[in-house]
Length: 126
Image (cartoon, rainbow, N blue to C red; front, side, top):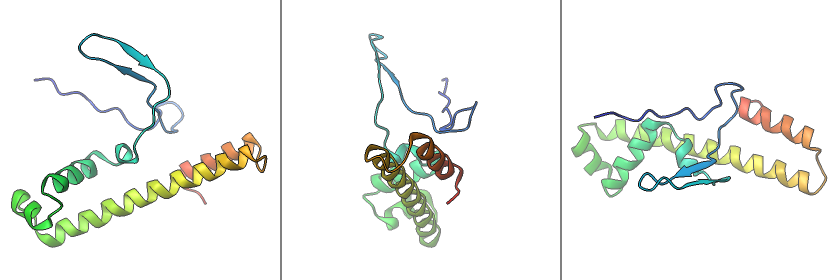
């Protein structure tokens, strides 16, 4: 069985974030191009996504997840805390980007200034 490879979330050329622009029906081959909204959950690491899915399927019960995975409560709680922190950081970053774009719309920033601020956000600078 061949396993599909996941593509990175960053551009291999410039390092900035990639976006989804094409969707295809695997059955009939119809292809739709455009700018599609991406969930912040998709930006989480594959490991965090798997943990979130397992936690969901365990009915959000750490006890049930512990029984299923053999991990202890403390280990699961620690991983969930890291997952929550990662999601909060993504959310904060996206909110900051939206605020920058709103400043362009209200002529408080030029597009060049906004691009610089967004680049600094992406690079992890303040």
